[in-house]
Image (cartoon, rainbow, N blue to C red; front, side, top):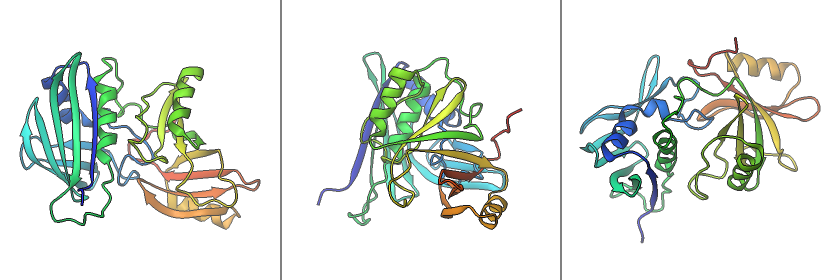
Length: 272
């Protein structure tokens, strides 16, 4: 049986040593803040990679860290390999290419694991996030542009095609992944007039009848208190509190408009 494997590659306009440095030292700058880009979005302060063999890939909290991977090979400017918490190995290569550096990843199950297990492809998103930073010398760190507390969400049957159209026609800004490299319901944030619009495919949240094509995504300071108030005062609860990256719940208002409320990260500032 063929071992499950996921691959991805980008070419960025910097040399291999610079690409490796950006990838490892600046991960918290380029790691996109989205509803699913952290394991525990309501607590996360950022991401970090510790250098050298035995170093760890971490999600950082006020009260500790979550270990996402352990480095097994460290060759600056050439190669980085890590074993991840979801029982895979991810092999990143940094190779000279026309115009800069080809950064590729091959992610596969660790030996002896269930060959039927799906490789989630987290590293595909990782390479896409990195490419945005490495390709833009004027990149604004995601630590300084976390998602606004309230974002509109637009759902499409083909979110990749929709994102490309919105960029081309309406002038939204952001990087569109290649079709098939991310789950169809992966939220993609795009900038517009200083704000953010989230684009995603239909799915994930159960629906009654036709799925909604638009909704509101809002971050609140105390999700449990907000949920209790909404339920007590008559909101229709579509999905109770659960963690899918962000810790959140989904409700409908009195005319059936859908709202997602999520626990704000410690770094998410209120509008001044």
